[in-house]
Structure formats: structure tokens, C-alpha cells
Length: 290
Length: 330
Image 1 (cartoon, each protein chain N blue to C red):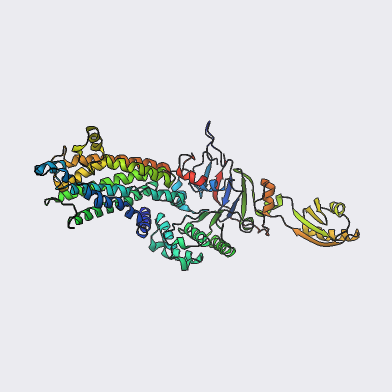
Image 2 (cartoon, chains in turn red, green):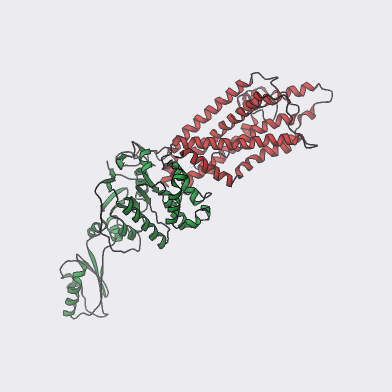
């Protein structure tokens, strides 16, 4: 007896392992940011000599230098960028009739959604961890800034880091999957996703310290799921000094976002997957009608 | 069955309405109609991909709306277009499809190899589908639809784009399954000669309604019998009054020296025509009996031709009695 959902995951795995280009393209911008932006935009150099060391350290939430602060933000950004490709596969499956074939079998509609979420979610973690590894490696290259972590990272801290990375990738995978279920054309999908990418990144604390932002932006940044994940990640690597809340609170906030996005995706997925009486309501009936 | 709803104040069009038929177990049932007549909509409703606004359909006693999963488990579906995954091999496509039915490689592996062999895909089984030709994709589609050994299979124009060998091989396989396993087949096809030869019974759908149903020979009888084509030598006299006077002749149309005679029994009219023409001193150079084809049935029922070509002798139907598919209109 085979579990139908595993069959779906196996299919996605085979497709991915043979054409892993989406992960590579998802990795491009974070790596470029690390190699160019992160090297050039060193806020530490703007601080006049003789300023007490803790001034910079406080602004950077305890990170030893700007690059280390920034690199953690890029870990989250890499995962979100990779998640942006999650929904595209569903649109192709809809257009090619593969989804219809799947739906004509006894596999449950929920299993279709959950296997997508699980597999795509796991895929988005890969670039996140590659960015961590790459940033750590840069620290050993002479003349280049790299990620330096405090020597006292605990097991609990590492677990928090991992938890934040996982919940963040589930949240954004679900969000972009829901777009994939909702729209019929790849062009519309990437249109929406491209519009969202920069605002999501720029209203977070991934690239610059919150303390130098205007108050209204600080407010926005505080609620951004990327900020919440990055807070937890930075706390686990650089210490908890200077944060308003303990890591658990940020993690809970992130979980709330994930819950919201998964619910949204569930609703849109079941709308797209149901055999609808209204030809406008269901992606499937539209595909059949053409 | 009615689909979709005519929305109050909306501009929704009704795709099918008043579609009622029964398919018996072990029967090959042909569902014919011009493009856009509602064939695919009907198949989609019966295979649970669409929900009818009203009416009821049962498959092997299972209601498609009350228990869609039970219906999905029972049927095989072969789509009009290729739905195989291009990035996977033929065998992988089949094994993954089997997995959706809860069948593991261990349980189904040999059956998959057999099916690939039957479909003449053994040598390409482990190649990516993107390297397949159109005909190979079609055959794979059929193999995928049959992978879980369904007792009832829906074929939506299954042989579209297949070469004659491919079509023959496919139907040989379907017939053998019908004979050995009692497979029930619900098919649509654009090849009327194919439907004529294969189907036990046929329903003709046009503008979302069933306009006729019956065995191929019943349908053909409904068009009004045979056509006798009589050719006379150039300059011979007019044969029309003489032909009209023969028994069983319903109409005569002439085009110079060629006459098309509609009649109830073509064969018995041949000697009568020859004798009568000889007595009248008109020289006949040829007589041909044309049996009605499904194309004529089509032209007759829908007012438009289905396809240009196609003529084939009818097969005598044979069927079991227990109902396989029942669809009741409302």
C-alpha cells in the first residue's frame, strides 16, 4: 500500500532533482547582495574613530559588524525569494492538465495541498542554509567581510534559529502557493510576486537597523514576518541584548503569520481544486471549458 | 444532467441539458457529437471533475455527487490531450499515477511493464516523455489511464492523432480487455468509422442534448436505408421515371448520367434496375450499393457533417444486461 501523498512528493522531487534551476535562480539575489551590497554598504565605516565600540554594536543588535548583521537578514530573504517560485509549478500543472489528471484519481484534495506545502517548504530552506554557509565561509576569505557569530551559541539558540527558518519558509511558501492556486497565468503570478518582493524586503529589518528608521517605518517593520524571523535568528547568534521581547514572542508572532497564510492557501486551494458548479469560481472548470 | 447553472441575470450558457442514457456493463458505448456539443462536459461530470447543476448520475451504483471518491476509485480516464509529465519517464508517470490509487511499485510494477509492452512503449519506458512522439504520448496516456486496472474506462477521443497501426493496436487491446475482464468503455471519438466498428451502442449529442441513441445499425436504419448509385452510358436516355417506378424507391436524384437512388433495400433493387433498364433500352455501365454510414446519420441528425470521409460496415451489437453507468436527466 503506497500513500498517495508520497506519490505526489516523489513526483515533485523527481522534477526538481532534474531541473533544480529554480533554486539556483532563487539563490542569485541573496548571494549578490552578500557579495556586493553587504561588502560595500558597511555602516561601521561611517562611525568616526574614537566612538565607543558599543554604539555600533547596539545599533546592530549585538552583531560584531554590519556584514554579520546583514547576512542573517539575507538568510531570511533567501528563503522568501525561493518561496516566490513555489506557486509557479501549480500554474503549469493546471495549464498542462496534470492537475486535472491528479484530481480524477482518489487522492484527497487536502493531500494535494499539503504535499505541495511540505515539499516546497523544504526546498526553500535549502537556499537559506546555503546562504548561512556562504556567509560563514566569507569570514575566512582575506579582504572580504563575513559572518561572525558569538562563540556562545547554545543548542537552544540553534534550535530557535532553525524553528524561525522553518516557520518563515512555511509562511511564505503557503502565501505564494495560494497565489499559484488563485491565478491562471504564470505572467500574472510573477507579476504579483515581483510587486511584493521589494516591499516585503524593504519593510523588514533584514538590511538595516530599526533604530535609524523613522517611527512610522519602525512600526511597519515590527509586524513584518521577515523581521520577526530575523529577530529570532539574530538573538540566537548575537545575544538577546536590546530587544523589547523574548525570542518566544517573536516566534509566536511569526507563527501567527504562518497560520494566516496557511489558512489563506487552504481556502484558495480548495476553491481551485473543487469541482465547481460555477465556471468562474474554479480553475478546473475553466481549464475544462476551454 | 444540466451544467452549468443558468445564473439569474447572468450570461452563463448551459453546456449540457437533458442528457439521459444508460451504459451497460461490458459494453463499448460511443458518445458522438460535433465539437462543442457537450461531450467533454458530460465526461467531466461523470468523472467527478465537474458537478452538474441538476440531475443525477451513478457509476456502478455509486452516485457521482454523493461519493465522488468512490467513483474516482472505480474509473479510468483517458484525457483528450496529453497529461503526462514531460520531465518524467513513461514508467515513472505510470508508477506515480498508480501511487495516487494507493498502489505501490511492488504491487503494480509487473502490470506497468505489461501495459507498456501492450502499448508498444517498452523500449521507451525509461526515456523522458519530452522525447516521445505524438503517437507515443497518446499510447502512454492510455497506459496511464489503465494502470490501476479499472473496470470502467472513459476515453475522450483516445485515438486522436494516432496512426492507423496505433489505432488498431489500441482497439485490439481494449477489445481483449472487454472480452477477458468485462471492461466497460465510454468513449468519444471523431472517427465515425471507428465508432461504427467498435461501439455496441451510440448516443449522439448536439447542442448539449442527446438527439439519438441506439446501436450503429439502428441509427443508420433511421436515416432511411441504402443508396443505389446507377451510372448510364453517355447519351443514354433519362432513367429517372423508370427508377421512380421501382418498388422501395423513395427518391431519385440525377447528375447527368449518374443517379442516386434512395431505397429501403439496395441489394434486391440491383437486378430489378438492370432488367428494367435493359427493357427500356438504356445502357447501364455501373451499379453500386452504398450502405448508410454514421456520417450520414450525423448529417441527418445534426444538420452538419461530422467529417468528410468514413464508410464501414456495421457490426452487430452484443451486450450484457446489468447497468454500468446510469445517467438520468432532469
